[in-house]
Image 1 (cartoon, rainbow, N blue to C red):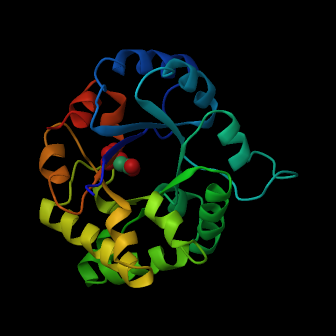
Image 2: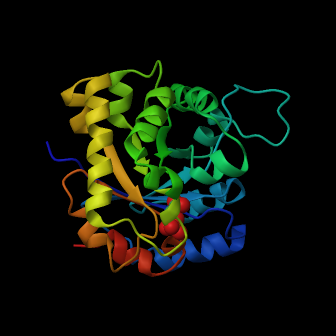
Image 3: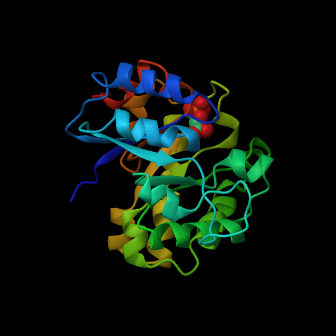
Length: 249
Ligand code: PGA
């Protein structure tokens, strides 16, 4: 069965709650699609108003992060159960900005992935190499390490239902998109890695996005690749262009 494309916006630390509602209203007619899953991953404080704003549409809401503990004395953190109760369906985990600026490592991310599944959320697990790693020729080794360690103890059924986002760090927010060949090669490498750890059916089912300077001009070519099942979109998700990315065909 063909995998359904999934295009997710990563709003990052942009949009106050009132701006978020305005953007959701503005995008509403533009992101309609019967064939593509559409997700807005929004700042925690925007979740409740955005869930309300997209009610009755084809848009699902995601969070940009969460903590793995159930509840308690973790000042400033948000639990998976809180997200679920607020109407969240997806959660980005392991974005390179979290790994880099907030020192999130793979052991922590593994706990977060497991907790997300436990709470009924779908993780969008991010991985990707730095420019230095690409130039050293260790891209696939690095990504295989990330995927393998982030998925320890995660079942085949869970992996089959999740989303993995390949985001080369050097392509994020830089306007430098990976070439279609580079993006396809790594996304295929990730699928092969899943087939090795699990099985072919799981690998055929997991959805793998490309992220890093996706825009209205390059989405169609990227998403046409056999192992690229959509995109995780930063900058362009805050503009009407996001509708063109969703409706790339
Ligand atoms: P970008 O960000 O589209 O602005 O490059 C992508 C991301 O960080 O998810």
